[in-house]
Structures are given as structure tokens and as C-alpha cells.
Length: 283
Length: 306
Image (cartoon, rainbow over all chains, first blue to last red; front, side, top):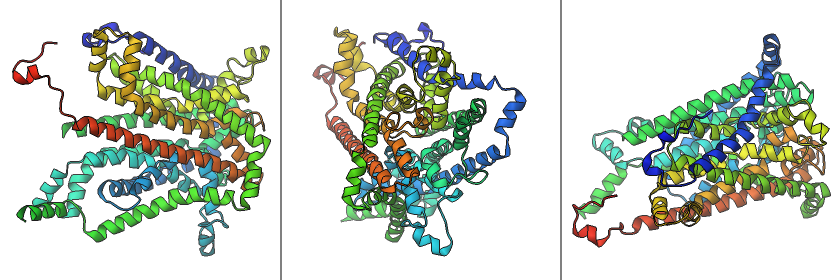
């Protein structure tokens, strides 16, 4: 729990009222909605013996789902890092008609319910869909297999990268680029050695956020994945499957593995953001 | 003349040749078109594939209506609760210094990194038939899991950080001087909040509420775990979409999905308007001359004693 000592409050700020009330309410609500239910997850795991736990989290089908979930999330967030950087760059540096609309559209994956994204991408990529019907004659199938999972995760993760890189690019000091070019750097060298290092922390943060979201994503993926055990079944679906068989302990064990991974990613993102703040503060 | 050519040289040095610009813009726009615009367009075309008639029929089904009502009810409870929490948390975190603040902020962000399915599961473990309070709830004939309260709880969890994380940096950036002045001048805490803090954060607040609402109405994974999928009773709009889709009622599924897509578009429009207004106010504030009372500008070395 948090230890709040009154002595830690700086005297200059004690003028404002409401510290106890708002902090108290914050902790109460946080405990009620987040911490107590999450601790239920951990306590439920302790009802399993170690062997049962391992059997639940390391069965071949579950391990196959980890591999798919992490690999698909990794590929999707790498694609997002590349194209997200490009989109952010184009939005900040260039002018073209309809730029404001495109800028607003980048947030679509945040606003569009995941189930809608899922059925829509499936309709596009199925053999009779707009895109699928063009690819099917060439023997390319992007729906109902792991490729579909990657595509759904690209959709979900794109705004994370764009929205973390964009403000940093906007704040970037053009003087540095001018200096680089005056010193004889080519445009590519300027990008590689001047611009890129300054946006790298933001890009990494966006990548990690997209990755974290992709690992836990459920709604958009299940429609397009085909959900074949060992092949295209993601870990969240394993949890749902175990729940439907009333295997609460097994579902909890797999959930704890996912949660542990989420915690590690959250810590990593926090560290990255601290690094990013330090970078921009030091300049 | 000389000046203009200098400007042009500097400009050329910090940008790319036109053909590079065109190619990069082209790739970026194609990516946006393929991954964002096409799926959005597909929702509406699929919904209207059999004409307006079947589109309207799908929306007039009683099950669709009960899904709309439940979705509105869920968002109507979850968003205000998270709004109150967001404001309280932002006030405590942004206006005061205390030990464990960074940790608290991390905990507030936590629901963002928890998989929606896990979010649903934790409520099943607390309130479900085999959960902590399951037997007690059953004895008192209260249903939370596979009922509306569970759906609302799961929605609150997944939308928990939205408003708080929007407000915390905003309030932090604004500092405490204005509030301190109000308090010193005799305003009560509530007056200070209503008349000083709230006008300063109103755009951030609307922004957070809009995004929170979009997620609350569109949440699928967490709600799916706790809902039990009882048609006409515990189906929200996204769950109704799933049921129709799995029953191969494609047009009906996309018709209901198009409602959610319209909600998403509305969200983006309001969001852009808010950003635009906020930027304009920021610029207006920046273009104002710095507040400098005459007494001080007359004696530049005389610093006010606080």
C-alpha cells in the first residue's frame, strides 16, 4: 500500500484544500475497482499446486498460443513502428490536401469498437471480400490464419506509435538540422544521426505501447484469426475457452502469466517515458 | 533579395527533394487508406449491401434496441463514475507532492495494460458463482456476473484511466498559483475548483470523457466474459454484433456495427474540434502581452515578496 506522510507535502502547496479527500477517494476507488479484483486473481492461483499451475500454463496448446500472441504482436508493432513513424513524419513535415482529416483518422482504432474492426477486416480479407478476392487467385489468404491476427493487431496499434512520435517531431529543433546540413551532412545523414536519435525514445515508447496492447487484444482478433488450436488461437481466447469449460483455476493461471507480462511491459514503458522526458529536458 | 535567397537555402537544407516527399506521402496515405479507411468503408457498404430496407429492419429488432439501451446505460454509469475519479485523482496527484506518487500514477494506468479478457475474469473470480462473494450473493439473490452490474463493473475497469491520465499532465502544467490566489482571496475549496480549476481544464475534461465514452460503448472482450450473452438482457451493442455475425446474419451484424462506426466518427469529430479549440485558446493566451503591473515594470529590480 501507499504510505502517505503529511511531512512529505511541501509547505507552499498546503494552501490548497482537498488533499485528504481526493487522495482518499482515489485510493478507495482504485482499491475497489482495480486492486481488490486483481488480487483475487493472484489468490486464486495459490489454490493450485505448482504441478497443476505448470500443467495449466505450459500445455502444448497454451504454449502455441503464447508463441502466436507474442510473435504476431511483435511483427505488428514492428510494422507499426515503421509506418507509424512515416505517418507521423508526413503529418508533421509535409502539407497535402486533406491532412486534417487524415490526422483525425489516425485515432480511428481508438474510437472504433474492436468487434467492429474485427468483422470489418474479416469481410475485407475473406475470399469474397474487396481485398481477399484480389489476393485469392494468387494463392494468398490473409484471413483465418496467423497473418490475419497480425493485420488486426496492426490496425489496433497504429495510433500508439503515431501519437507518441508526432509531438516529439513537432517540438524537434530545426536549428540542429540546419547546423547538420551546414556542416555538410546529406539529408539522410541528418535524419540518421540528428533527427532519429531525438525521436528514438518516443518511437520505442510507442512501439512498446502498441506491443502491450496487441498482446492483450481480443475483440478484433477472434473474428479474423480462424481460432484453430495450435495454429491461430491467441492466449486471451485460451482463457475464454477454459472459462467456458468452468476451469476457473486454469483460466486464472494463464491470466496470471499474461498479467505478469503486462506488468513487465508497463514498467518498461514507464522507464522509456522517463528516459524520453530526460532526453527532451536535457536538450 | 539577399534575404529571400538565404531563407530558401535554409529551407532546402531542412527538407527533402520533392520526389522524396511525394513518395513518402504516397506510402503513408496508402497505408492509412488500406488499414483505416477501407475497413471503415467496408462497415457501411456491408451494412447496405441488401439495401436500406434490410438495414432498417436489423436496427428495429427488439434485441437490437435492448442492446442499444444497455450500452447507453453502461456508458451512462461508467463514464460519470470515472469522471469523478479522474478529477479527484488528478487533483491529488497534480496539485500535491507525496511519497509514492509515481507508483500511484502507474497503478492508475494499470487497467490499460491488462488484457480485456483478464479484466473480465477478475470480476468473475470476485463475484461469480465460485468466487469470493458468490455464495453470499446467491443467498441474497443478487446477480452481478452474467447480469448488468458485472457488465458495468467490467466497463468501469477498462475505461478507468482515461480521464485521469488526460487531466493529470494538464493540471500539472497549469501549476497551483491561480488556485492559491483564489484561496488566499477567500474562496472556498469548491469555489476555487468550479471557478478557477474547471475552466482551465474543461477541454482536457471533454477530451477524456469523449474517449472514455467511446471505449465504454465499444468494449468487447471484458464485457464478453461477464455478460453471459443472454439475448435481449445482457447483450451490449458489440456483443450483439458478434452474435449476429456468428449466426451468419452478415447484413444485420454490419447494420448494428455501422451504428458503432458512426459513434466512432462522431467521437473523432468532437475530439478534433476540442483539439482545435484548445490550440486556439493556447495560442490566444500566448499572444497576450505578459501580465506586468506598472509598478514592477517601473522598478525592474524590485522583486515581489511572496
